[in-house]
Image (cartoon, rainbow, N blue to C red; front, top):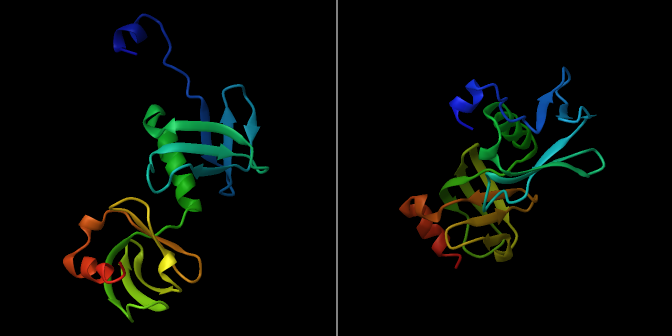
Length: 167
């Protein structure tokens, strides 16, 4: 909608929902029909391959209340709230560097630097390393924590050399 049409008395399009936290930090969803849902949970449909598309806001029974296909289609305030809500729920550190590995046969321990600080991963088997695409890998440690290598090419040479030994 351009500024001329707004100047002629038309209203800006309505935001289809408002997502906010109450005084206790619980996420609350208010829809344009006036209904209020609390608590709600925000989840990503494709957290690895398409992290900015496909968001679902669910009620406590797991029923979908709102679907956001593309985060760029909503306003700045709702975009920030949506990303904040999903960020509180998700925990998937990104591996930025492999410092060393205890061995090249599983089980082995990886010592890595992540976007959340240093970590030590215990890999039970080679099946704990999954290629999501040619450049994106998902590594699951013995405790079930998933670590993401978003772009293999962004890793330094030492890290790539260590990873090559596993394949």
